[in-house]
Image (cartoon, rainbow, N blue to C red; front, side, top):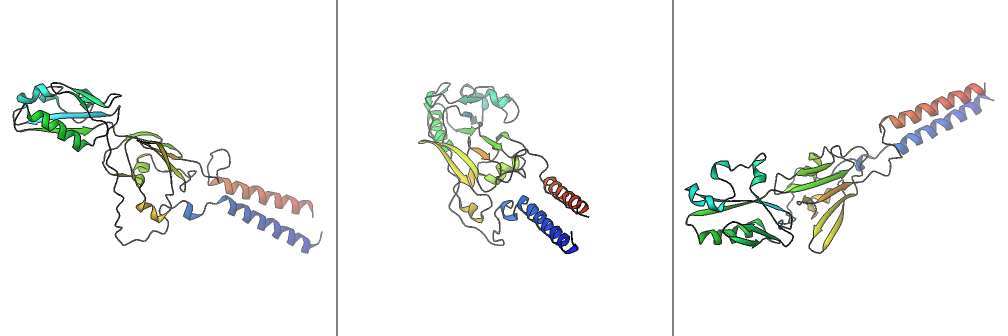
Amino acid sequence: MTESLKSKLFSGLLVFTLLLLGSCSTPLQELTYMYNVETGKTYRKDNFPDIYRIRPNDQLFIQVISDDPMNVAFLNLISPDRVSFSGSNIELVTYLVDENGNISYPQLGEIHVAGLTLSEIREILQKKVDSYLENASVFVKHVSRMLTVLGEVNRPGQQTMVKNQLTIFEALGSAGDITDFGNRKNVKLIRETNNGTYVASINLTSPDLIYSPYYYVLPHDVLYVEPSSKVYGAKTMPFTTPFSLAASTISMILLVLNFLK
């Protein structure tokens, strides 16, 4: 074989190798959150998170507070000196919303709370407490604020929402961020509504995400990060795969050239 033909063969195989490596890489815009978002400006938006409304199986922490704790002890589940917002004690003082949307409160009876906000529930309870006591205040907290993150994240599972306004980035950050295999352009958000289950598709790479109604997540939302279409089979060391292909191709080139000597 002539040197000219060998040179053309080598060049052709080299181009093939470069094309193969290019096909294995992921464009930067597919990995970057809010790609090309304009910085140095304030984004004014009206997509504030929906106010969550209590539903069956939610748990509520309710406490009646007064200057004299003994006067309100009969309205609280536990004695005043054991009230706590951390640890296991909080489980002892929660009210479970039943399948009919009601809670059973000592002295106050059965109260319908499903479909109401925390402020509305507090207002109802406050009126009932006022009929028993003067200068007493009612505190209401939703303690079963859980969010589920599944799929291509580093720590999938359930997490507790510690803020009333939690963004989708904060939720994913608590799950350890999306893996190298996750599809950031088609994250599914599954949300239960009064009309049924709604599934939204979210593009995390879009700079317009900040205006999306799903920029904020709600209790009981499920986020699912599907695998990227560039993941071919096994999930093994994404950055070594292109180099393995390159090494194999170069070895093939050398073998062919050696054979044609």
